[in-house]
Image (cartoon, rainbow, N blue to C red; front, side, top):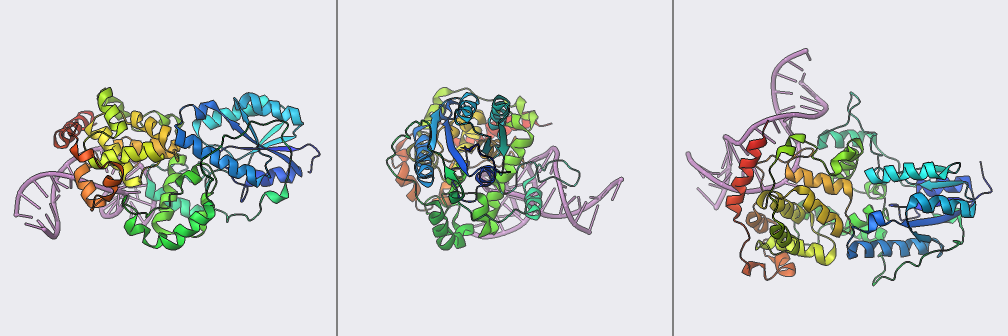
Length: 415
DNA sequence: TTTTGAGTTGTTCGA
DNA sequence: GTCGAACAACTCAAA
């Protein structure tokens, strides 16, 4: 039924107007809608500058798509969203469902606070919403490959080709200016098409090489929903499609077990003995470990808010198995700085490296930072780019020694 | 029902 | 130098 009250489209991690189910649902209720984004300290406070800067770019781009009418406010959504709904006499608030632990709690609280104004959830940041893919016995998967197969069988709908033109965007009653950014957000679709046509054919062979420009670099766009995975899945297959499946798998795992955002999935790891050395942790964060591939990765993270996937594994393995520090220390540092930082993917990839997660890496699979560098940065180009001085540093630990310590500690918690 | 084989990302050691 | 085995324990689907 078409209502005379306007709707609100509350954007969160769906910062686009194309192929946007919540926007379509809003348009179905009312021809007039207010586009809203809430700057939530809960999410902004633990974020580093590159992460915030990327969000601001996304908001500018979205604002352009809304004809300059995106309303941006600072505050707690539980207070601000109902207040704005009342201010404009909104009949409903439309969102893409959030499946993260904080987002779920927040949305339930907002729903409650909205009272008679309905909170309508349509779509999600995933091709298949978390919780939909189950084993034959109705329980969730704990192993990736069977999940992926079932996920492929489940399938997803094709991207819709409707845009913002179906809605008449309301002039916001008031709004905070989006901070200026040094650069504009690039056209994500064009980046995808370039990758698809030029680098995707070799992706399988080259994706592990941080010294080459071989990956799509689209993770941050997926994180903020500038691109929906449906769009990419339409024209890719093989390994790249599997990478998108990992993103969906970990979202599914976190949906079923939200406590694993901070807790070991495998509880026998609760007995694991960790070290507590803040100086070693600081050296890792600053990229001063004396292991060049580790230092290059950590410095790329600080400089760009990004790190190549292969290097993420190497530095994570180093933190957990060479420095014996808790995986959640590293996970928090990643979430602070990674522009593409996504709680589900981040925490569960860390747990995978630490051996306490799904499909856990066998404990004896300990990355040797020297071997890894030779294999994946054979000419040293990546190291030269980000940490040319690292080879002159004294290694803060002896890998061969710490490897054995890690093996012994694992042995000690074996069931 | 039970068995079997495979499962993202590795390293080392000894033949 | 190359190559295969060994390094756990458990999940899941197919046989």
